[in-house]
Length: 211
Image (cartoon, rainbow, N blue to C red; front, side, top):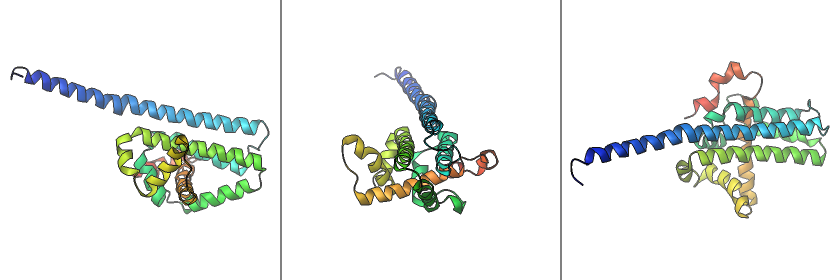
């Protein structure tokens, strides 16, 4: 390579890097956010149809809690990332103690406890589908970072819960219990900012606070 060709090579490399940057941070991320939101809209529509069919009242607390959580994921889809999910899983994210992971799990258990087994199972299946969509979105959005963060702690448990069934593997009881506790905390954050008071508290949302 002659010196006269060097500026051309450098310019070509810079253009390639710029193109990759635009593709990832503009097109790919926007696509992933739109895709995740569509998944959440579909789940919310399924939940609505389930209630419209008479399986559960629109006023039932369990219906309201699940819909509120889905709304939270929709509203903060553009800020959802794997590091934030892991922080929320490990430490929680809501300053409001009413929406701690433990309190969310208690509410869900109490509100679903009086439902018929089939209805309770359907709501739980919708909730798990919501959670798996959030995990898939966060992992696929940052594949390189995911490799670094999913090797231990909350990341490992959440990754096992998401990935193991897809390859025909079972999650151990202890890992499943810990992963579900982490998911309670993540869901609690979404639910705490998924209500009608969103506009007044959006600037204080933990999704925006956590790096």
